[in-house]
Length: 248
Image 1: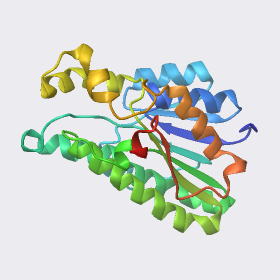
Image 2 (image 1 turned 90 degrees about the horizontal axis):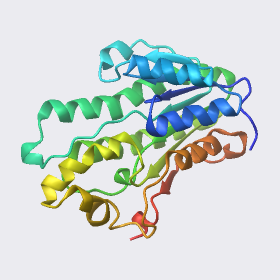
Image 3 (image 1 turned 90 degrees about the vertical axis):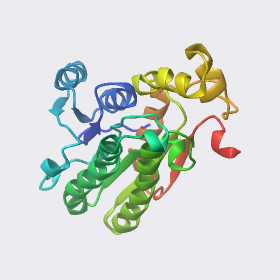
């Protein structure tokens, strides 16, 4: 795989999980990486380890992003959060926060990055979606709605950016071995009336044909390819990495 020398990459949620794996992978191939995260300390630590730059940012504060300008070659929209509740118990403020972080903020970051990408005639938008961007599960109304919206945003970006050398694609993993997934286990156990030990085999891994969690480095590997020169004709696509879940 060719390197990313001279390329500037912004990864949101870059201090942990999938984002951290992406930041490390791009930096290892020569990119200048901006680690964006709501946790300022973790962002600084991650950036220091890879020789990158930290950006402490709360993506839920979308008003602060309205006039943003970004000069990056690759934008990885990865930041996310989860809240597991039946719709009738789902707090409206939590629903709104998830939509802001996972749909409105990606729109605003894409909006901020496109002018410089268009000027250079090159850009890569990699949206870390989910199998839940293609299918639904109960108790995740906000997350599923945000990811479905991200899929549409990604496709529109692909159509508008194609003439300017900009591609836009989604990566759609199943459950990934990250803190975001680990935090769901107690809620899933309560909602399904099972023990926490039973959540993986009885809830999270019932649908995939491959019975394991996705590793963050696997997602990062696909992000590298989508951002590279060889993927210039790959745009408007959604790449499942779900162990066969969506094949059902």
